[in-house]
Length: 361
Image (cartoon, rainbow, N blue to C red; front, side, top):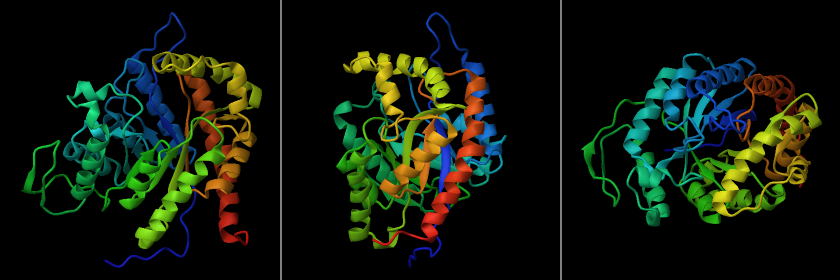
């Protein structure tokens, strides 16, 4: 097959992702059915205001309602017209690639070609004992299952044999999706091995930056493009996504005030499990600065930060998690409105200008 790099780069994509959090203020609860109802309204609004992607994470903990993202995304597909619908992430290590492919192929049919898989190893480990997998096989499980998932995209009977799933012998997998191939991204948390795995398989990379200065992640993006250039030059134009936490309000102070309590509840709970020190408000405010990891602020603040990071990574997609911890639905809807109507148009226009008139090296 002959590959060619398109002469006109694709437009910069801007979107959202969610873990469908159920966390609430101490002493209160959040009804799971209401949370899904609110989430579907949020995805519908994201489509209406022109955002490009909505990703939904897979988690198997009491704090989250999305253990089966494809089901919720299929409901969203019926309420939207153009927004792409992705996992964020599919915990491939503890799943069956055949069933993953079938579920997302079905989502692709329901959405008429808008489904994506963002495959990753996950930030929690509950799915491993839940589905009978050994954490000692953590890395081997992901690598083997990713290779099988990529084979399943080929529209022909396949024969395959591995260590963690029964073999396939000239078997076909149905249904087939609208898109050929069904898009698969690899989510990377910041290890060189994960970066090389994505590049070596010719897959777009989604890099999570949820702490620290963005500049320290530049070597991972450079490594990704170096491996592509050296080993897969026909894939040299594969996109990179930067995925980060944040919240948007009409002013910077309002965004910090409204989001901090919910973020602190979640991060401190995780911190107690993992031995992190408690989050302080000063840390949160510092992370909202230009060179911090979180995109918390007014539309102008978020525009400036996306463009600042684009000058570092030259990435093609940006996804924002609104937010870590459950915020009032009305405030999330306002944040989505600001993101789609105030932030996205300015960012797309400026990045299109940069691509059209690159700075000489």
